[in-house]
Image (cartoon, rainbow, N blue to C red):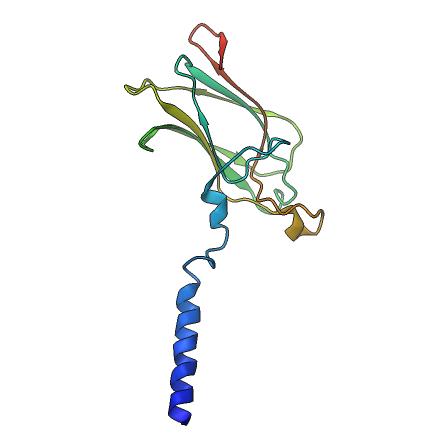
Length: 159
């Protein structure tokens, strides 16, 4: 009887140890799933925006003012991907201090035979304001997008 109890205890410990690398115990993985832009401009995971076919440049105005930024710096990958998910161009931006100023990021759009491009914003991590005890906000937040513009080669804004 004691051997059976030891066997079940060991089996339970093995199951718990192996479950930490699988859902739902994959901490923070929801930050790397595509999400929408919230009403107040925060990215909630990976943000993917279709690029107008006539656009030659993308211009973003971002604020990195998350409450834990001084303690945990944030890297943001701004990429252009095609419809198959291949990365055509990327730039990395580092945010190390909480700042209320707007950072302007401009990205030249590569030529693509399919003309179906997607602008992707991928934060290195997200934070949940509720976990910091500041608000009851349970969203996973990355960076705040203040403005997003696409311009043609002649500088005309396009949609």
